[in-house]
Amino acid sequence: MTGPAPEGCGSPQPDRLRIRADFVRAAKGARVTARAFALQARKRESDALEGARVGFTVTKKTGNSVVRNRIRRRLREAVRLGKTLPLRPDHDYVLIARREALSMEFRALSRELERAIQKLNDPKRAAAGSRPARPT
Image (cartoon, rainbow, N blue to C red; front, side, top):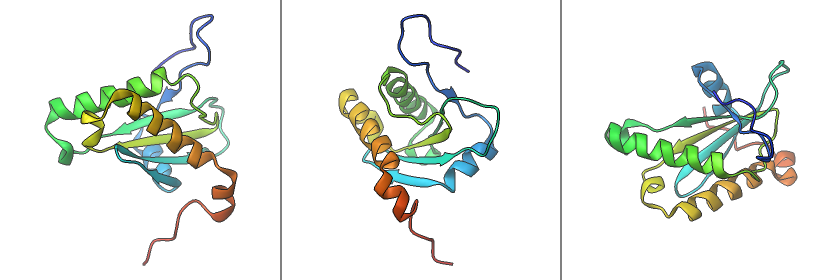
């Protein structure tokens, strides 16, 4: 878990999601897909936690453990270096990685992450609903 940012470092880094129930709750929220990942976000219920929290999921379909860990490290670094990411403080975000996250240029990955978060934060999107209902 990350603590507060050192003095003069800009905004504090988001905390990490680590509990499965938090990932499941985020899966019920809004979703944006990108070439390298899918991003899920959901506003937290009222709790004492402050700041945004980010979780990372890389399935076994993407490759062996070495590949999955490299992808996870790249995504974590994109979030860490994205000091200007428009993360909302009362939201949980989950990045579900795709294999393209490994081969994509890092700058493009960072830009894609910023665009996805901006798309989730778009007020027009919130008015229209988080995502289409799933057929039952």
